[in-house]
Image (cartoon, rainbow, N blue to C red; front, side, top):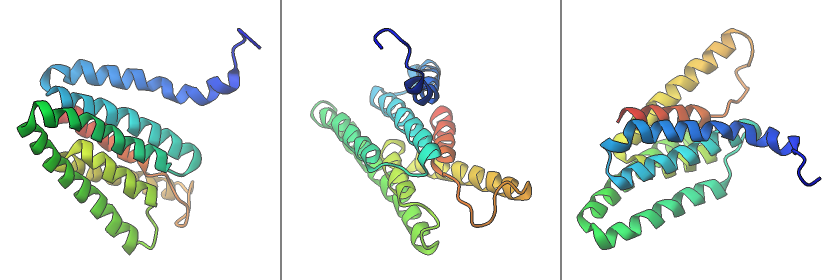
Length: 185
């Protein structure tokens, strides 16, 4: 088997080939206009979000390991700032905490009200994404992602492709919201 292309592995890795394109475009377009940590967080969020969207499409779930990795990566990147750029770190921590609370809190409220019509993984994912986006980024991301998901769902229902009780993964739409927010902010 050595030296032979494994098509099964290639089939599962093909969706991830878009990652270098998205990451490269982000750095090329936004690299000169952002503080280093914000640029790093944007790139990390694009990677985590892409993985989450692809995984959610395939399995209809968001793994806790991905959300924990998002949280750990955020903590690992903020710690050095506390030593070298404390005022910036404090400002970013406050903004991130507000983004985490706003995104996670809003989705948790919808999760409770809708009687689990929204997945728990989506709640955890948007809360973790809120750390990276901050309060000013998480709200437009949620708005863009949920409006796009609703329009897609309505269109698919009108075309009789899905019914009222069918489910759709939300994270791909949230990822589009992240892309719009990160590229336009």
